[in-house]
Length: 312
Image 1 (spheres, rainbow, N blue to C red):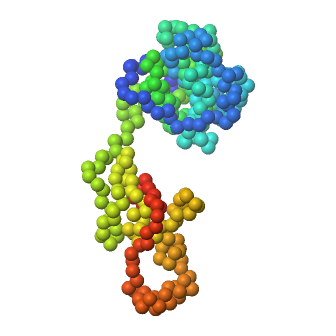
Image 2 (image 1 turned 90 degrees about the horizontal axis):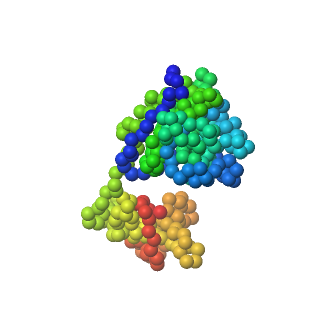
């Protein structure tokens, strides 16, 4: 167990592109309260973000913590749910715009190790609250990882961000959060270790020359197949008709492309005994056997596009 009054580390200059904000959603109903529980960053500063403060709620759920924000008594930028909440493992709560100063540290508090001992911490910091009772209540791995992801995101976005610090270090007389059970060393390693940073997806494959689309019978289908942003794009109608189906358009100007199989039924639909009998009668009248019916598709007017290699 650590001493939360010593939880603090400095960030070096960030190298790389800006990272995406971790998955989250606005806490229901909070946005209309923002003007009453946050302040303009430039009111007591230059608007730059220089520190990230780690808090814990000393409670058991998000709603209890958010009641303080709804009462306009305190605020923070993000809230990380506890294990007993449905959002745990899925998404964090967004509680205030990063452009606003949240009320998460008393204005008169400061520490000489943090931003040169400057006061009015709220105006040059971001704050995250992690739902935890701080009483024999271990933090989940997901909570720690999400807090680290938030710091990494902010680190990549704000070039003046240097200090990552506990609430307890800035206000030791009144606060002990995030508490002795918070795994600070593990958290720091997750923030600073390059291995913990998200891996960018590989760039899309660039095709050289046309893409061949081949039917189950081994015949090439001419449907203008190509790659667009790494996705195979085809002309839908030639592909569908090349597979032996028929296309009809509905709703006046073509808004619905309906794919029909043999006999006018939608592709994949069961055919009734009457339909089968009608087909056989038609074959007799035309002098053809069912086994020798033409498989040539009927072509209508219009063209459609699909962003996949599958028929629509």
